[in-house]
Length: 207
Ligand code: AMP
Image 1 (tube, rainbow, N blue to C red):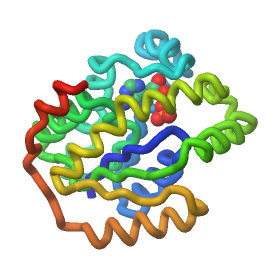
Image 2 (cartoon, rainbow, N blue to C red):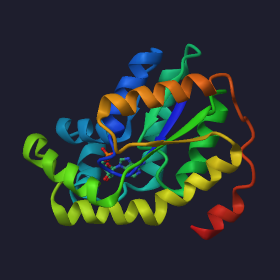
Image 3 (cartoon, rainbow, N blue to C red):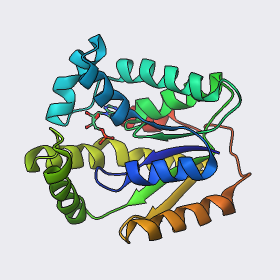
Image 4 (cartoon, protein in one colour):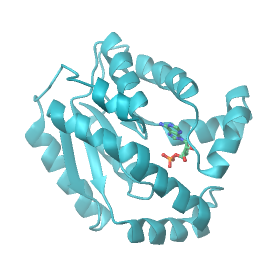
């Protein structure tokens, strides 16, 4: 099973991504987690990206592309699947994700979208801030991440829809219910695979 996860911050990408990956026995590749690990270990990449994470800005595409290429190459080296969570987030990244996965013979079968209202996102992330102490879970940064999501991430959903691989699930119910809904929907769609990217230039031109 090869899945991309696209959702606003606080929609439950991390929780649901880990559960789905465990259910289908594939690695959970969460770009936010990978970046935070680099920051914690103070690697060269970590020092470069820290300012972007702290501000709730997007890390430059070129850095993301290298990170994702390495993670996907490793995950698919033995023909395995993946749950790629947090990438792509822009039209350019959507195209890069397709090209990277295509070169590895492992394009996504499903683009999983979790739908959650803005008010609920803010409520959940403020609640999380008291527990996880993430530098980007303060209200102004949450608002910025949410605005970026609507501006540059949401538009890529239409591309996946046109390719016939978009699966949109209501992320508002309690987490166990959402997991059940996702797994049931993924089971239904298993085997369905659109391999052609379809026309992307219009989308990229609009970016
Ligand atoms: P997340 O854990 O998915 O909420 O991501 C946390 C932060 O990591 C984001 O606010 C960005 O600063 C950075 N990040 C994660 N994924 C990406 C991506 N695909 N493109 C650019 N920045 C990203």
